[in-house]
Image 1 (cartoon, rainbow, N blue to C red):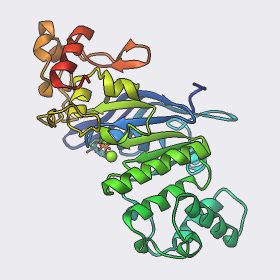
Image 2 (image 1 turned 30 degrees about the vertical axis):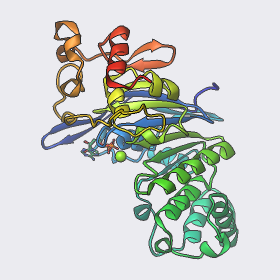
Image 3 (image 1 turned 60 degrees about the vertical axis):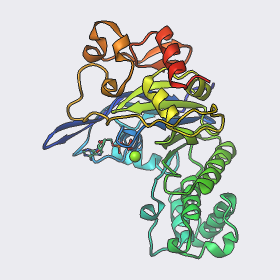
Length: 344
Ligand SMILES: Nc1ncnc2c1ncn2[C@@H]1O[C@H](COP(=O)(O)OP(=O)(O)O)[C@@H](O)[C@H]1O
Ligand SMILES: [Mg+2]
């Protein structure tokens, strides 16, 4: 693998509130190379969006406390988007890094045509008049598979279906050929068939533009076809990080095992039931001592000395490139996978 394009190191984002400090993103580290897709997976509220907004420099620095680094390895040298000035980071958005959001309706302006909006995004970085911008917008709509692009470029957001709007958002995010694309739950609002079309499109676009892609989702089931590696987040921390096959076939964290058991799988064993993970994640204001997942974990009794309640497990590298934050031994994990049916 080439040098990573993005290196996130010990990124921590907290929000002071009346009730206390919300530790939304807690000592997060990961890398993504160009041509690679990292899926960031976790339940709602686990800190996925907060982490990506920090990388993009989109938090209000008056209300968010941010430490750590998010280094973009650009052609003319690295820039840390956390410590760089807002002006520098603004100029990176759109061109070096771009983001697509879960709800395309709130990201598109209702009163401007699709063509005008994509054209404006393009003209931020390119010398060209409005006509050239509309031509470029038409090309982009065509590229993302919108039929009749020349006509549709003149239409307004409300004239597009949910799936087509998400294609428009992808076209807009890619119009300046960004090196990094962060897609934050790009398919959550869509029905299953359209979901897989959009994921397929993202995969094709990644090849076309050789981008580093971060695909954020709460659904581990959707990433199998597109992700190279997966970071599983729980209560603001990465609890497991590994290649996609390891995540699916050798999950090392009881939370990942739980996520796998709660999704329908094509390769599902006969008679295996879908089981939702019981309980709720802890409050990010008063994280418990020890492992954050312990109140929902069925294996804590196997760990001696009440360790799960007293010591936060480290994110240890088990085998090459496979990290997990759990006190269970490899032997115990093997049994856990088998007993829950996560081991196929
Ligand atoms: N501006 C903010 N002020 C206080 N808490 C916030 C703020 N933004 C996000 N949070 C909290 O941070 C946690 C993580 O949120 P988020 O990253 O949006 O989760 P998700 O994994 O669903 O994307 C949530 O508990 C959320 O309520
Ligand atoms: Mg989110």
